[in-house]
Amino acid sequence: MMIDVLNILAALASGYLLGSLNTAVIVGKIYGRDITGHGSKSGGLTNTLRVLGKRAAGFVLVGDVLKGVAACLIGLGLGVYVYSGETADSLGLLAAGAGAVIGHNWPIYFRFKGGKGVLTAVTVLFMVDWLMALMCLGVFAVIVALTRYVSLGNICATVFFVAISFMPAFGHTVYFQIFAVLMALMVVFRHRENIQRLLSRTENRLSY
Image (cartoon, rainbow, N blue to C red):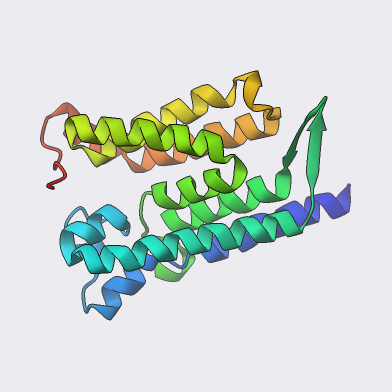
């Protein structure tokens, strides 16, 4: 049991250190801009798109996906699993994935000023359950298409993720449901200013 705990902690720490490699901040520095000092001041994909343009956002997209995948592969490699009847989940994967999102939100390398963790969270979700990820992505796309509010799409997809995580059809354990709730709390917490702007109708819309 002690070995399992140590492996889970190792997965969490590895995910956090990888997640702390905030691609938006790194790309911003390459472009000579501190991304956390412009636009929404968020070290994430959407703010990079607004401040630095599509090319820079493309680099951020690739970087955030790669670090999420790398963290999850490390977690899987540690091989800690939990079972409940016929269902099973990799605790190493869930811990590393959660660590990557925490690191993206509060990166140790950049004075804990990061993004909102959505893209990394989506990557982690694809690694954990691709079908749930596609469904959440669909909800996000519909909300953004209808409202042009990226933040609202993020929040709605996150709430939807929590809701479907409790559906027996997907075959996950209670640990996955705890993971889903924690991920959602982080995403919603990081969007608290966006929520205030949405309520006051001052939130920026995505321009096509």
